[in-house]
Image 1 (cartoon, helix red, strand yellow):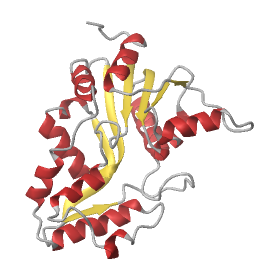
Image 2: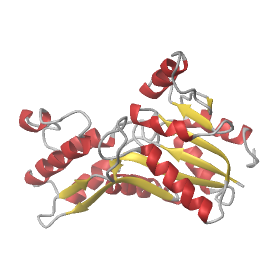
Image 3: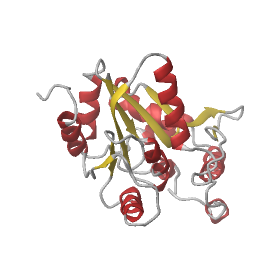
Length: 246
């Protein structure tokens, strides 16, 4: 029996939105209105495809993009938490489910030396196209009407847990750590002895509070513990499990 840590990435592992941080690689650090105003609600990944295409058209190299992404700050206490996880891999599994993309997350984790903490990343695919521009594609298609068209985190988590179960891996407890509206859906598949950890002051915490106060809404089965720093999460991880406390 193991512990599973599930992390969102933007405003959770890192203290910024990686998709907006990338604009720092542009000379003016901003987008023209033609790109900026092209966003449609629920179609963020499609929008980011246009953003990355524009960045490529400005002759910003992938190496320049990477160097900028490597400067994104981690959320306070998060590097200590991830280091602890990497030191306890026999007991703790760790996955990231994010609306960012594969290149950004890989670059950021490798630059910090923390990639060993994360067993698997589920996020939108990113690669260099024939022009040498970064191209972003949706992670998957799904039929969940509560989530953005490119990613249902509940579906990802359920498939992962089913695959692990088929491989003989069962989790004593799951910790789900996130901040945003798209982190609400996966909380519905957590069990009574699992823990959902919304970031204090962010959308997920507010949505959970609203849901718990509504009659007739599906009750949250998991324990709800808000966090402000990775130190808070680490404290809960140690208190809820058999991992070493020193």
